[in-house]
Length: 135
Image (tube, rainbow, N blue to C red; front, side, top):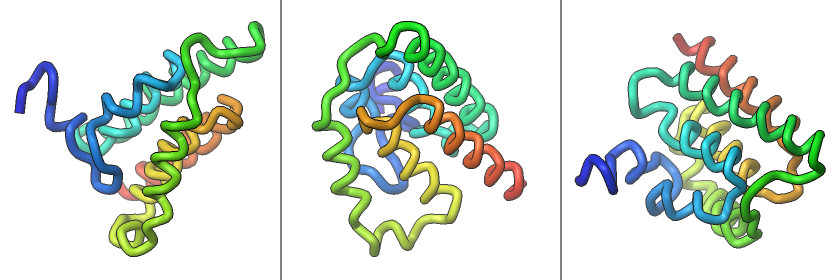
């Protein structure tokens, strides 16, 4: 794989198909940063750190939402619909650990235009707790 354009930690996921980049294009800027950290949280050897980076971006998105009433960047239902459809694969979902299931759900929620950033922060914090419990 090309380490710049197709790094392994963005090219594969234990649940979702495609590359991380395919999902980022239709997300608001701060959510897209959080999305990529959750996507790769288990691939670079620092899962708790990556989740906390995602939380930092979601907190910024929450402040932006609170002060401006919206987030910067596009937000299309197509990304959410794609992720949500894949999430319906219960056989594949059952192969994941509890923590990876929560991460997969969080990725789908990040892509949902109707979910406010504060809610995403709460779910991401729960993911961080799961990771801490596993260590």
